[in-house]
Length: 196
Image (cartoon, rainbow, N blue to C red):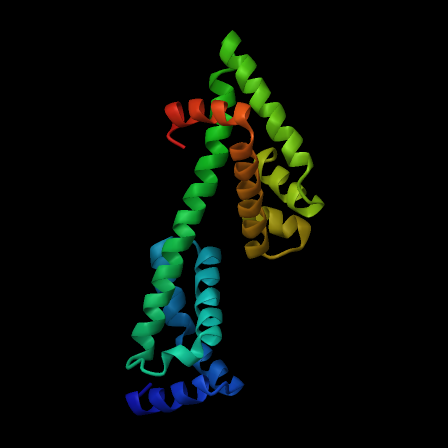
């Protein structure tokens, strides 16, 4: 795309022209996707990063009037979105695996096993209080150890929905832990040994 054509397209896009959005999407989707794949090494996550990029651009289109190079602008956003996805994935996977490791490691020790059992019972109780769909997705991830894609296929929902539900589950559980003094004490043990 030429600079002049880009500028005209951008002006139409800022004005809320749906066809301009479609043109922008068609013109840059592949470049953004390839950039995201290089960073994430996962096509599903890369698609999410690109989708979030276009959604964000459309939502805040009034604020990009002074953008000189739309391609550079879009690439910067998709890179930022990719980094956010990496952080979210690390946080989710580390948290789930750390909980499992914590219980496994303490299974043979009396006092520690007792404390771990108390925390496990706390988790089980709080998991039961999660909304039905959120609980189902969380348990498929935690107990059956299914990937986001496998859960999405089994339940007939999007990959992004699975990720958001798991993220929200973990957020809810953390908030409950912070409010419970006994569980917070156990959490300190987890922090000490597993750097949560």
